[in-house]
Image 1: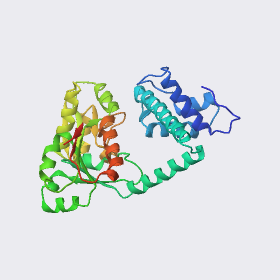
Image 2: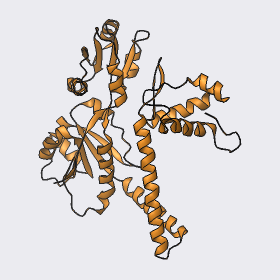
Image 3: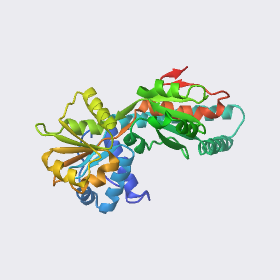
Length: 326
């Protein structure tokens, strides 16, 4: 990799583009370990902070993943290539729309103005949208930080709360209700007669998480630290679907003394992101810690975003499910 010292583009942005290029061209595949920040900084003749900023931004975008003590890796090369293909598709759509506008007698400046105004209108509308996310366990509710668009408010509601009148009163002010496909029918029954759109989405563990669990050494228990047995069962089920059956030692709301006692007896620990800082205080040296986070798959996230974009045009509420309209 080489950086252009004269074009004025910040080095960390150039480095991000170079890393993406390596992945898109197939030079770096999923799981490839990148040079350390210090090694790459020395190779390119830049500061370590420059490399660190590039790595962190690519990690936040899902391109890279880092593990304390092990290094930085390519998270999912197919995802990066897919993102690039999607960008090219959008650019082609813009080109067609621009040509259509010019054909109708508008200038390119007019077209740019139209796009800007319509985009600001949509942002204004989305800034007022409230989406309720209904789940049965507090861990998944706490970690629901999906990128739904500028200003969209995602409000977590426990399924058990929705079964009470107070919970149903809370949900009346929402524009859309989202839940996992496994709870869709129950949520629809609980909200029957409320004229609220309900969307069922598929929630899956991150691919990186499954890969890391698959690489764990067998023969000793793996501690699973979480807040509810419901979440523990979801983790077991997700791992079983991937063909993985580690010896999980469930620790529900483990206190300080319990963590001190159980962690040295285990080969690794799995926990929800919200518990990481607490668990790290008692983590033996060199023991691997894996965060287990569920998130919508790409199809569900796209369906959710497109549903939000269509809300303004709906004259009557509709009931949605994964893959269509009822």
